[in-house]
Image (tube, rainbow, N blue to C red; front, side, top):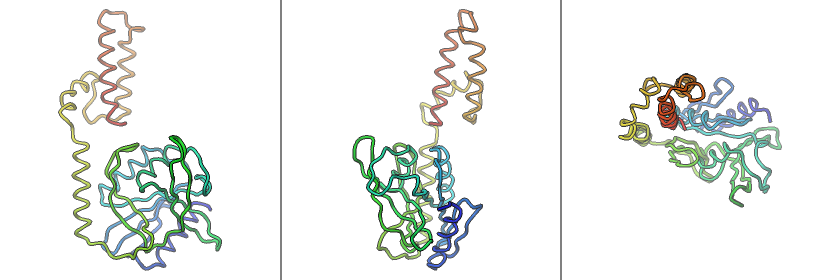
Length: 257
């Protein structure tokens, strides 16, 4: 089923449920849901591979703004029900976010769209078996936080659908506390450590600011490598200086991976 058509069709299902204050399709990219507590959730429909970096950026930005996120994959991107297959890495990341499953969309028999969970059960160290579950219902929508360590580390606000549950308006105080916890956890995980402070000289070696982007650090390294690489510079100090540049480059680039 074509992604944009599926996006609009599912938005209409959410609206018909009358569980939410508002439901909007934004920029033909995602559904924005306002819950009765004025809390927000977004649902992305995905019909092609998405990088871990892009997924992490969206999750981080939304979580810091108190918004819960869900990624729903085109069913054609997943193995058939009962099939065993080696998964694309980004599907593996989604599985860790949504408690061992991912969500998919496809055209229902009546021509509408259905969104359903797909359990991904381990068969071997490298393969998973897909087990399709019944389609979700709008009133089953829940929001919460999940902390992951591998393959993508972080603390995220996510949307799930809980079968056979009754939707109730979430407590605004609960969401306020959850947002504060998310912000505190994010600061703890991203604030400079003692090791980072000691390694401030790495920035000096590469000649970049502490706020330098990944691309700025990479460009500084290339510039210095052209200047000090032993193949291009036969001075006695060039080899030692290039070693320092390599160490600094590896240390700073680890911030982004």
